[in-house]
Length: 115
Image (cartoon, rainbow, N blue to C red):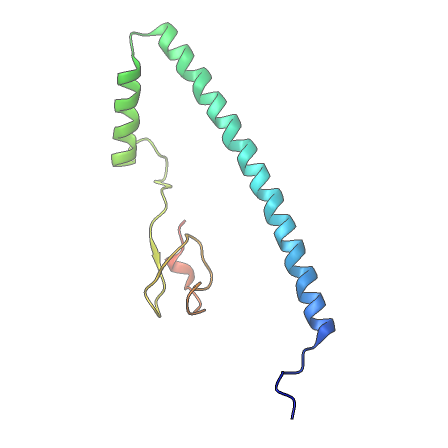
């Protein structure tokens, strides 16, 4: 009796190709997001330079405004900050918008997702 389970090689090869395509797509999306973060960082720097030139605000004022916004989410439209997501089956903390638990595989109900 064979100790190794029978492996469906064509199915396995198909799974590998599908996962590779998914990884390639994810890598492309990550690159797009990195570019967007760079663009937004440059836009923020340019705006800050304009504000400094045309007002009496200082770096301390800017940092205080940033700290306040982070603490209260007052300047974030729709409060887009991620909320913790927990698996309803095993209660592990999960990344926002998870559809399945990384630990036990349980489905995550749609209402638990970050808007």
